[in-house]
Length: 259
Length: 132
Image (cartoon, rainbow over all chains, first blue to last red; front, side, top):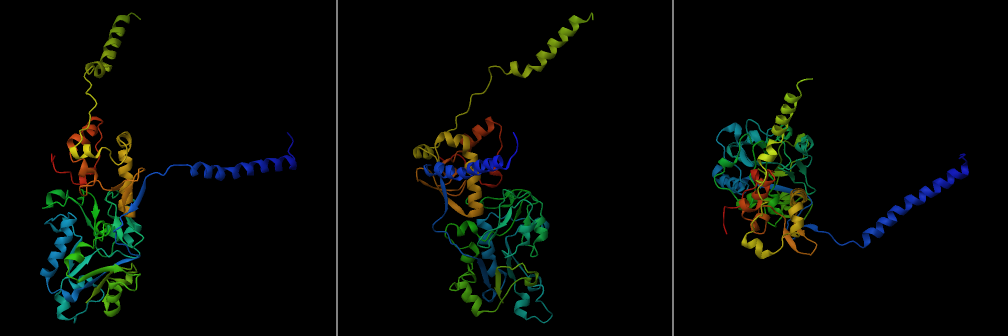
């Protein structure tokens, strides 16, 4: 067949028609289909545009005030108690001012702050370094700002631990099961070779409950929506001077401390 | 060319040796296990989806549920009949193991038979043993 402009245009026209029918056919095919199963969030779930936490350290005096809060967190999440320091697993723990607020520390910092233990946990950063470091997307950031882990996917490479500037992550060097004194049936344990950290009680928010540390803190810890100007947390931030950990790194931590 | 007999005998011995597992185990195949249902599961009549579907696709459902719950915080599953379910393997009485609380007689039976070892229970806590 000889190629002519005429035959080429004919062929092109037929092809364009053929391409055009596909979406039409698709629309017909799907219109009569039955509805498959659907998946929804729980109706009672607490939601926010951007979750954040304020810790009012003025309400704490010593380690004893913080112990029940840590215990509440570690109990419901089956966090093992390992004696050896290098094996330790922590979701919520305490440290000194000079270690928590590295850049704010100075020689003449006042006595109360100098000796007060500070609660530390995952900062659920706005720009989390751990998420970028994770090669399997086991660590990810939800739309509401919570930095979560999918323990199923963690391969234990510990890149996230190297990336996190706050040391918020722990690695299971050993099988954690024997070191959990009382297993909580409503939360899985972890296995050897998996990293873990605070999950902002995502499993509790999803069923309409406040995080465990908030409930155990008698009002010293408040979580809420940063994007809601009417929220309690915004009120607290407006009326009190707050500091965050290592803000100059630009990670944008979501845990605020009233000192 | 004069070793015909030896070669054939050798071949027969080799063939018998090769097929040894087959005729040794002949007729001894263990019957296909039938998972036992708990009273609670029996009373519910139907699982999240029809039985045949669950038999073949339960791992797919668990996979979808896992991603839905962990990543999207979606915890309610509505099946084609419009019935609602709590999407959870081991949390509470309305989870998978809340109904199928007999792991040894339900999960393990087929998993052992088909020689699969899912790692669910490395982390998820097994339902308490034999509570009927």
